[in-house]
Amino acid sequence: GVMFVGEGPREFIVANGSRIEDNTAGTQGGAFYFDYPVGSATIANNSVVANNVGNRGGGTLFFKRGVGSVTVTGGSRVY
Image: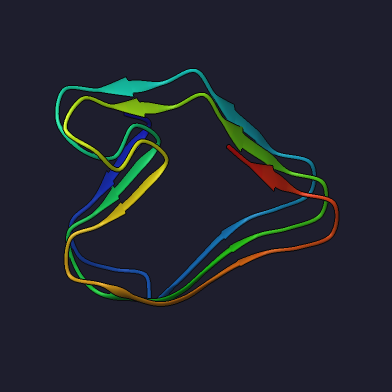
């Protein structure tokens, strides 16, 4: 995967035309794996998170202990 987050952010943002594509994780979280609760995750402003694979699930975003909300806005795509 791209990033494992142990402790930390209560808010997670991918924005401004960012592209996170074609990543693979051996377990969960092909793009991002969050080990602690996250208040919100936002994909915004024409960003793309695509074609990421978690071999045991959670291909794009994996929240082990939960997330308050996930928002995709402003022409962004997640697939």
